[in-house]
Image 1 (cartoon, rainbow, N blue to C red):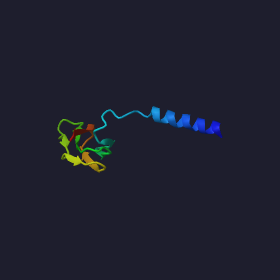
Image 2: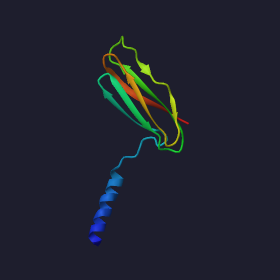
Image 3: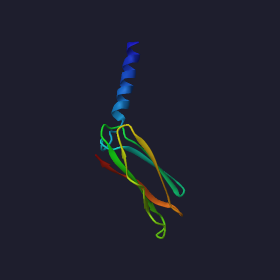
Image 4: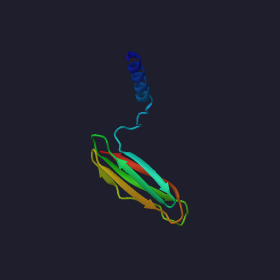
Length: 100
């Protein structure tokens, strides 16, 4: 029994140590997903301070206008989904942060 608990503790400790720390712990956690000509960003703020987030979409074609969503303040424990699109493909998409 003691050997199993030691092995379990080592595995759990290794898992905790292997988990990378976030680069900036004061900003919301956002994940973007591009599917065809649509991008979706899902943000959640697990921190104790507010973060103002905004989705930016750069289109692949020069004549297709790039777009920026309206900036939204995410208070602690709040989440939000943003969507953007281009007519003929997305070159890149990112979320900007302004911690408050």
